[in-house]
Image (cartoon, rainbow, N blue to C red):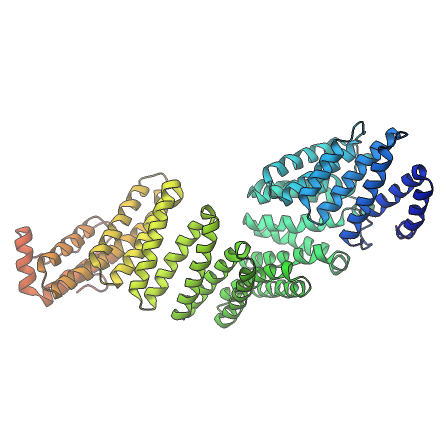
Amino acid sequence: MGLVRALLPLSRAAARLSPGPGGRLLGAALTRCVAPYWVLLRPPPPLRRLAWAEEATAVYGALAGTDHARPRDRDLLARSLVWHAYTLVLVQRCEQACAALDAAADVSGARWPPAQRALALHLRAQARFGLARLDEALGSAGECVAAYRRLAPTRRDRTLGGLPGALRTYALVLAAQHRTEESVAAYEECTSLLRDMSVRELSHAVLVRVRALCELTFGLEALGRYEEALSVGREARDAADPLMLRVAPEIVRPLRVRLFADLARCLQVTGDLPAARATAAEAVAEARVLAGRDRAAGEPLLVMALDRLGDQYEELADRPAESAARREAADLAAALAAERPAAHDPLLAVCLDRLADCHRAAGDRRDAVLAGEGAVAAYRRAADLDPTAYDPQLARVLADLSRSRLEDEDPDGAVVAARESVALTRRLTESDWTAHHVLTARRLRVLGRALRGAGDHGAAVACYTESESILIDESAGPDGGRYTASLAAARLGLALTLDAEAHARLAEGRTDDAVAALRSLLALTRRTEQADVHARCVASFAGARAEYPDVVRQAWTRATGQDFPTFVYRWSAAVSGERPPGAT
């Protein structure tokens, strides 16, 4: 290969002296230089290969345009245009790659060998994937796989990995469409074919093997098949060894970062926490090297790796180390978002959200609020550009911010954030009832707690009551059991609020309103078997009777025509009837 490149000046001179035979010799030499090399030989820079491909296309175009053109010249022109598309895909000029493939298809009278047609389909799939035209890319990739399956084993083209490479591209597009199970099945077929290859055959598809094994690990981890992911991941780690890292660092190092991060997650889930932390630290180290050499490619991966390292420190309850990792990730994401907000605001929002959780767990209330406010602002900017994708996340972080503000003794600020969260969730429910109706009940509980903290008991009662009603309706369905804990939380929140309202109204001298709250609390006790709700009812009635004996008795009799109850605890199959903790 080096000899062909060294002789290019002579080939150009021959083309000038004899345009016909010399031009064909130059075109063949240029095409040879463009084609993939043996894996252990470092290829020339992509832009140089692109220049050779453009020169080859010009040479063959001139030959095919003469009056004495041979049929073979048109064949070679079509082939050179396919190789031109290949080099354009290498430099991510995907729109031009599609145009080159269209030009190749339009060469009149050109013959297309099956392997060349399969290669063109593969390149079209990759170009369309690069343009995010996923449905079209999937169609081309499926056609490419079918074309390679029809090829005889002795004629399979090795460019881009043949059938295994086509399956890998097909799986990659499926993964981008979130069809993870289908993607994993395609990757498994791809890796099975690669394992059956001889050493000589595999020498032309080593990079396909590295990519397929790493990406299969990602898919298995996403499906929760952690033991299988660990097994494949170890094989991927061996494939992406330091030798391959030297041969193709721009391809292999990003794969290693993601691979180590996913292996850390699998090790964490399977219980090997020290190994998980060490593997996550390896991911961070690889990402730092990549970021030092290619900031645009490396820093987003470094943010991801730091986030995964933060997860391991969280699992080990090492709060200072977790905070340091999450703070560095947030600072890096903020710098990226300042340069390209549309691309990196969602990443910044995730990092700040995780940082807020870390501060909340450590009891750093003010820092939790500041990080939460930053996450809300970042998600708000992302939702302005893509509301379908980010409005649900915005509603969630607003609810989290409400909790943080309430813990930081800012009930009014908590109410503002919770009201926006509820309003946004109601709007989302209009377009997707199934996904967001139950979330409305959860967000109403957050708002109810904030309102109770702000002293607006009546509005808080309304929130908890609506939340309870939503969950009762959902519990009537076939999956009703999954809402038991949420319904219990709504009823306990309602009991606490009614208790607080009753005592507040008694202190204000509004005895009729206090009795109305006590009656609602008693009705709640009658419709639930929760011991904590019953205990709250007992404590509330006992406290009212002890602090305001005459006033509350008279108001009760006036409202109900009955004496103030002396026993309100409910006997049931689920509740023993013994005095609950906290009862008086």
